[in-house]
Every structure is written in C-alpha cells, then in structure tokens.
Length: 267
Image (cartoon, rainbow, N blue to C red; front, side):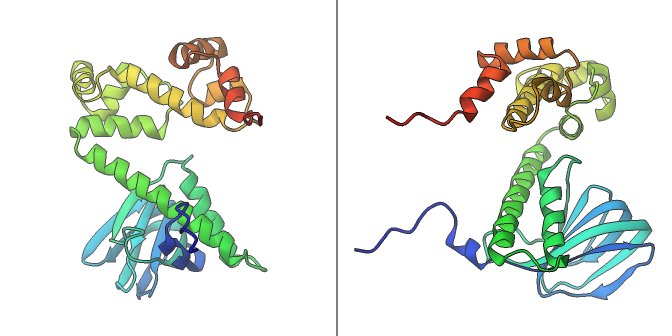
C-alpha cells in the first residue's frame, strides 16, 4: 500500500539550495555583474542604488533588495555602505523572484535568519545542507508574509498606510494621536477618520491591539519576564499592561503563557 505524501511542507521546497553568501563594506561601486542564482541583499548601513531588470532601486539601512537570477545588476554606492547578501536557487512558484525592495524592521526575525544563512556559508565547517535549507525556506516564507502585508497596505489611503507602517516599525514608541498624525502628514481629525473608516477603531485603539498581539508573541518566550514583555510593548507600568491583557484575553499574561507552554496531559 502506497504511503500518502506528508503535507507538512511543499515537495518543491526540497529543491531549495543556498549557494553562497558574503558581506560588502566599502564606499566604492559594485560594477556590473550577473548571477545564476536569486540574490537577497540587506543594507545594514549606508545607502546604495541597484540597477537591475530595467529598474532603479534605492534604499538605505533596513532595505532588502530582491534581485532575480540571470539579470545583470550594477550597484552605485551613494555613501559608505555595508550589506549582507546570499544567493540561492529556488523552484518556480515557491518565491516571487521579481526585482523589488522590502523594508525589514530592526526586530524583524528575517534579518537574523539572513545573517545566519550568510554565516553558514562563511563558517568552516559549514552548517549541514538540511539545516540551511530549512532556514532558507523559513526566510522565504516570512518574506512572502511581508510582501502580502505590504500589498494590503498599498491598497490603503497613503496617510493611513504610512501611519500603520510607522507604528509597526516601533510598537513600543511613545505614540500619541498627535505623533501618529504628524508621522503621516495629516491632521489629527483626518487621521482618526481614516482609522475609523478602514480599521473600525481609532489610532490609539489600533496601537493597543497591535501591542497586545505582539505581547502574545513575546510571551511564547519563557525566558522573558512579564515586566520585560510589557516594556517591549511600550508599557512602563506593568500593572496597567496586565489589566489591559486580562481585559483583552480574559486572563493575565502569566496564566495565558502557562496554558500555552504546558503540554496536554495524556490519558
């Protein structure tokens, strides 16, 4: 009897292969060249412009360039720049290889994964092929999620999209209605109207929802104390954070975490 194919991952993902990685740290240009592999280039400092596939893409720190395989590229280094880059082969349909740029927040896990993949190619001995393949697959799936979120924001009013992007980049920041409106370049009343129309709540209510969602993610780490989670979400008063969390999820964060981390009992 033929065994069914597991559905835990796509069969095509087994064809993923990390080919090379490295780092750039200079004030000079990278002259025209071409790779047989898809390349990801993360700018960690400085600013540069890359001409590729008929496009001129420019970005500074936190910019991730996606550069398609087989396309000639030329990097103009606009100021002393540092980048981390990897080249990989990916089966069709698993990842959008079109030339574009993404912005990765400072605490975005994809940044760490890309750095680790680069290190895996520079280390001797190198990490095992299966480990790098799985990490590469996780990175590409995370980038697809970021792409999707960017697509959703691109359909919003530009001021609302800008406000949401600023909030997502700094959830723990000292945001006020005025600060959010200023960041988006509109009045407070206009900002409130945009959030109400598209999100069903005001800017500060949206911020609170996102902070508490982020808290849930942080609570999965058993080594973070509750006051550390609160601070990372922008709440200096841990008691206030606990009250908000209980109101939203029906139980305090400590109990919520315990329920998540305690394995089910076997009968």
